Length: 105
Image (cartoon, rainbow, N blue to C red):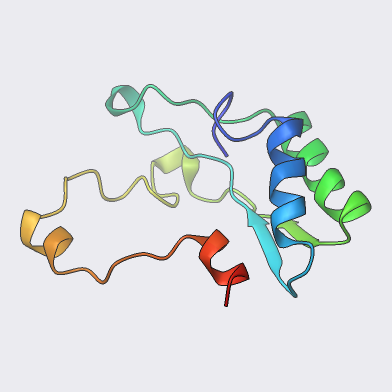
């Protein structure tokens, strides 16, 4: 979760409304900073818990918060690889489907 990007209450409600008819589990993953390579910062614990409570209590969506491990040694998720992907791997990737499209099926 990125502070000020995807951790606001309004976004929790948007996600809840989008997913409430599906049997899903939402894993909230706090952003692991990668130093000066990114302008993003980690959401506060209070914002993450509030986001979780909205999904769980209002929309009855099972929601977990991923524990941060390895951040102290820059070995947490997203911190080990900081090189940009090869252009060929981007071009050969299968097209992504928006979740909104799944509701239309």
